[in-house]
Image 1 (cartoon, rainbow, N blue to C red):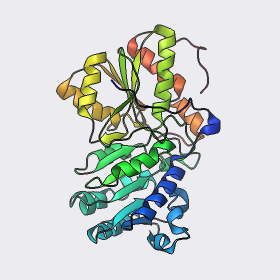
Image 2 (cartoon, rainbow, N blue to C red; image 1 turned 60 degrees about the horizontal axis):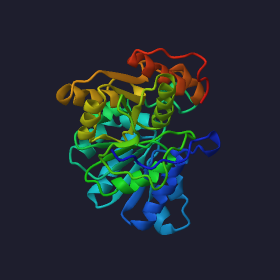
Image 3 (spheres, one colour; image 1 turned 180 degrees about the horizontal axis):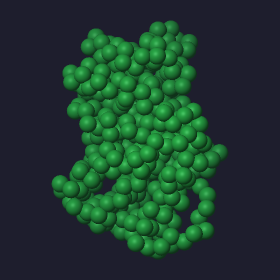
Image 4 (tube, one colour; image 1 turned 90 degrees about the vertical axis):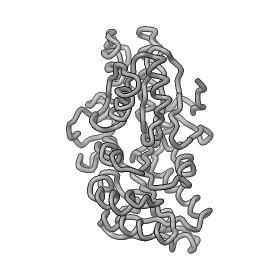
Length: 337
């Protein structure tokens, strides 16, 4: 196993927002590739599509289109531009893209397999106290079922740029899942991203922990806790491409470790845990623990409060890993991220 390079230990002074990294990376891409166009549904200030809209270079800014509050039209317009030879990046909140425009994505983009990229910030429950209706905790489940669609998820802001460059030439549509608020940075700009590959960020042979999005950070910290408590060596892997899933690596680590856990900021049904479970059931039956939002509509609140409430902070993940391993968690051992 080759470990991938990681950034320095994250502290909150260095946390960065994926959506801001997305706007910057998209602007760079638009400057390099005249085919790139940017579409928004009246949310350019939130999705950072404004970077294209407000570009001083008119050859870039004129490639921005706002369709208004209508994700269905956003997707239809993107499909038309793709058929005309453009490379559309259509942005909106993940919950709107995957929910309100699901049928348009299915019929107008996935069925003809068009090269449309969907920028979906506001993934998961760490959106902020805007209201839980804006939490995208079913987007992976909804979109993973669509043929031809690739689904990628940024572990942190530093990985957003490599993801955009690593998927720009992928045939067919791509959904890019991101968080909203500043999050821990665990990778660097030099950390490789290869579309369709799972990367190991921590070595271990007792347990394989597959995590996606910024849950990679909490999985890494939780792995250190179970090691200190019980000497358990848990491998932690970043699933930055949820579909197509790197089946070979899932099987390899399942057979090597004998136990598998998945960690995601998503409903436990239909997300990364479901994708891994499908592989294990068919190729390598292995005990598995799925850690995520346990089939509820999460309450609105501050990100840190919600992660703690739903067991997705460091302590929550560590406790669930200990329960899965059938070893005790020591209260008071670890209290804060």
